[in-house]
Image (cartoon, rainbow, N blue to C red; front, side):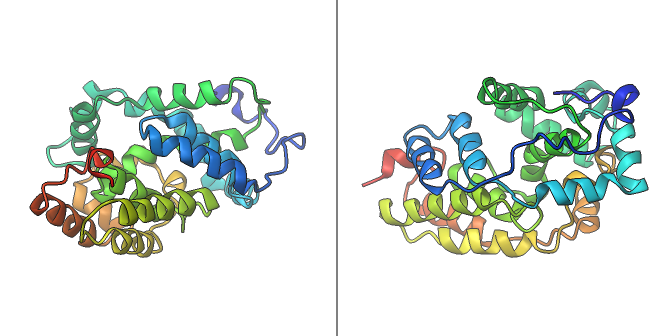
Length: 265
């Protein structure tokens, strides 16, 4: 749900009626099994995160929003999808910028930030809604996902998605991030006749994420005009190599990273 700047200050910081997050690993595993049969079914990903949530997210979000910086950022950037989907405006930013790289990525993949919102809304259709400032924080957890693909250099193949989630865990320690990342990598290791270092790629992604601050707490509008490499430096995102090594091995083995099920044994 969009948080509009004019009404934001009047909202409570955290709705006490919010359900307390609880871990349901068996539910998560059922969602994961369905996800493995259809890796494009984003609803299963949301199901895993609902079953393995970031239990400290309420404390982290409330603490950030209680600061002057957090409150100012929420007023300045109330709804990221509107910024991220305005490609006409983003294309006016400098060549080589994060904005240009983001547009290239999203257009090549046929994605929109609003599309991810709609996937989440479908999953949440029969769940309670809360109108508080913390919802802004939760929205940004979702809305920066594809931006992380661009910043980290990980693609939208199965290993790339696993690596983005492993990278994200140190910033947003929901068990769902590591559950999907490691379970997906383990499935690749067990089901593919391949020497690709998939477990090493996920491990490296997790280490890379440890040096990056929480992206949802940064000004995205300020990052977008920066040269891509400068944005990475400011966020402490160091180069990664193992993911590219895995892709090189797959290429030599004639394995399509975007269709791993075809090669599964």
